[in-house]
Image 1 (cartoon, rainbow, N blue to C red):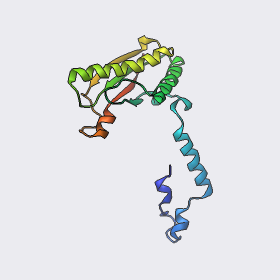
Image 2 (cartoon, helix red, strand yellow):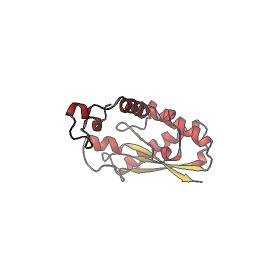
Image 3 (cartoon, one colour):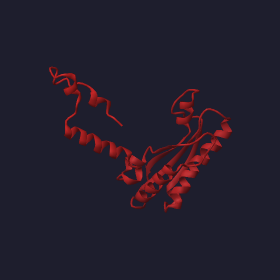
Length: 163
């Protein structure tokens, strides 16, 4: 992934030819490469700190509560972090897009939250530390009737709480 800012001319060097101003220094290229590598690492490879848990979001396919392999790996890493941090409790929120009835979406949101809880408990997190709640289609992250809005709204979110 290229950094769009790296191709912009420097405002500190207005007399340089555009090609010279646009070419980053070798150390800048190395720094960009290291940053890109870090950005591609899965959550399980990164240092787990509470801010990475609070607000963690995973999205779901239409009419599904099935977690993807990356979400399962992330949840395993979160479970490992929680094993060493017993003072943290979680609320997992299940959400849906606007399609479907209110009752159906409340049930689907509950299944999504429970799917995340089940991975955490299967990996050693005490179920008493986790609450689940479904908001169905009542709390969209994007309002609209577009495929993008629907995809973003089909999610489960982890909220961190003190025990």
